[in-house]
Length: 157
Length: 83
Image 1 (cartoon, rainbow over the protein chains, first blue to last red):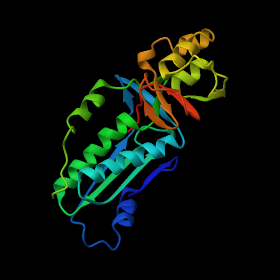
Image 2: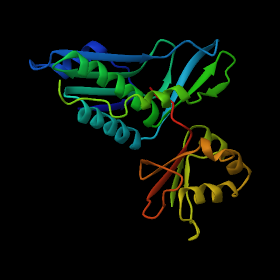
Image 3: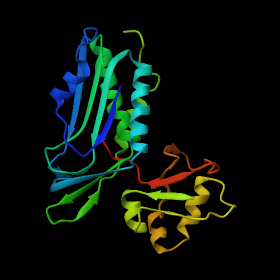
């Protein structure tokens, strides 16, 4: 289990290799990478700036990760989330979930993303081509996505 | 009390945080939001829609009816948009 909040970019292959080095018990690794889209509501953006709450952001990501481990038999996991100014195409977030079997890994990765989107204190501000900034509104669909995990998850692989 | 502001709440108030003496009559998070709203036009704008304000006490999410007793740090921010 590990959580990192950083300005620097990450390399999915390198992170996956480091997380699973020497592990022969793992049979399934699911990785999710979130990236910056170049447009918002049909208008191009030149950058996206992510603000966060140092201390609480790490604590909240750790709580979300711990919940995933309670619900699924995960053998390893990693969450990396970037902050600061990012450009279209840049990486924002990486989630890796590893387990003996694929179902737990797939489900836990989706759960981690749904939960961190609605719990981890990050705020996105998009800057358009005219230089004006716009705070991204929270999506009701993200909140609704949590409901599907109610009572879901199995410790039995 | 140490108060922190993030995203557009920080921008509207014009500072990332401050330390304020709170009246003893403030019991809950909702009381505190209502009190802050009256501190000036910039606060009024930041807290104009209390249902868009999320609050954390000691770096843990809380509901508006949560008591502030025992708080070391109270943060105010819009709904989160990470991921």
